[in-house]
Image (tube, rainbow, N blue to C red; front, side, top):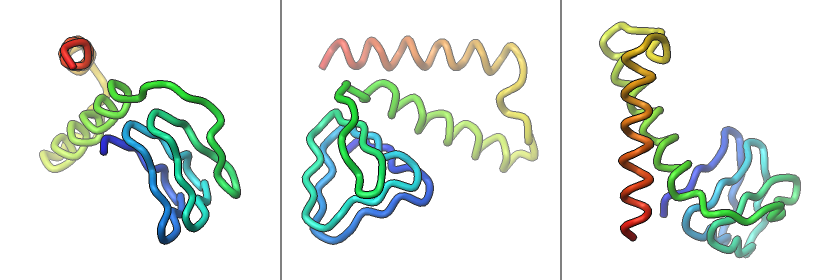
Length: 103
């Protein structure tokens, strides 16, 4: 749950990715590899290089993707520009940090 799997990463059969992980783009997670929760993994073969709770970062990243997709559907191809985006991203980050603190 709540993981970010990077572009062109490969996760093979039987691999288990723990909650709140980040799998770097291009990483190759071998069969039956168990990645502990809150890990950042990268490489070929993938190895955990750092542990940190990525709950807020992964939720924020998902929000950014959704924000961009909705803007693109409206024909707005520069969703990241302007004061309105900065304000809404600050509000979202504050909301996510409060939600995480309440867990």
